[in-house]
Amino acid sequence: MAASAALGCVVPRSFRLLEELEEGQKGGGDGTVSWGLVSDEDMTLTQWNGMIIGPPKTVYDGRIYSLRIECGSRYPEHPPHVRFVNKINMSCVHGSNGGVDIKALSALCRWRNSYNIRMVLQELRQHMMLKENSRLSQPPEGQVYSN
Image (tube, rainbow, N blue to C red; front, side):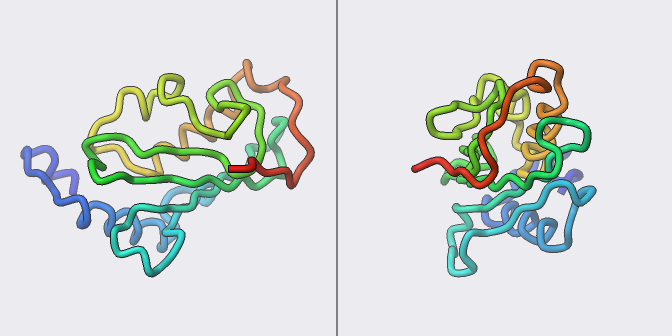
């Protein structure tokens, strides 16, 4: 895949998302984030679940955060829409609906078609360790956004 992108080849959306699905199913990454389709019936590969384990020694420690990720018809040329299902206080997350602010996360605001779901989830986890988020009080565990 990386070689194809480096040569300027355009990988079809479905092929790209199938690669991401396979990586997610094989447990790609370091085990602190995971991702997969909401439904195995989703032939458009549009609706995804994500999961982030809160980093140790942070206010997020010991918590598992669920996310919804939508890879629209223009993915991977355009970034996915990402929102937290579990309530969370973080500088890059809208408190009203859990949506991730595209301007506050470099993986989204500087999106390249070589980026992927794993990179977005890993950057969100990195944001949990930033000083600006380290002292934010968190909602009680188990609370979810209404939408």
